Length: 143
Image 1 (cartoon, rainbow, N blue to C red):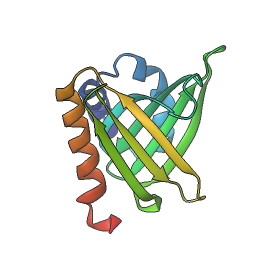
Image 2: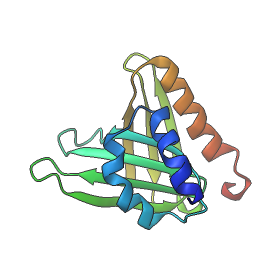
Image 3: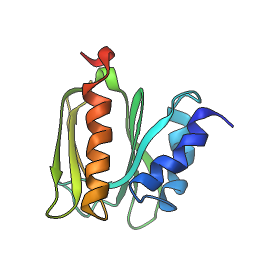
């Protein structure tokens, strides 16, 4: 079993995204190297498009991958596949009133992307915020 496969399910459990995230696993697997461990897998929404379907965010040590499952036909599609070094203006905000973390990034093509991870409770929100903070602030390659 490769590193990605062995860490994917634990990362999905951290944010309460299992078993729904398993459906997106084939797309994630094509975007991520087998030796790149999964840090976070979370269900999310697009704040600007609340009825656009189900979204899943995968954060690894090197990549950010976002997939979408459309509402009417339940088709899966890749929305964002970016190396963390190619993302700019990365911001996140912890919201404990409706437990979640909002992540905003600017992709290499200049498009600003916003994703809100809806989480079950404030303890989970704190854990997810810590994972996001570690991924985007403690990596020397991102500076």
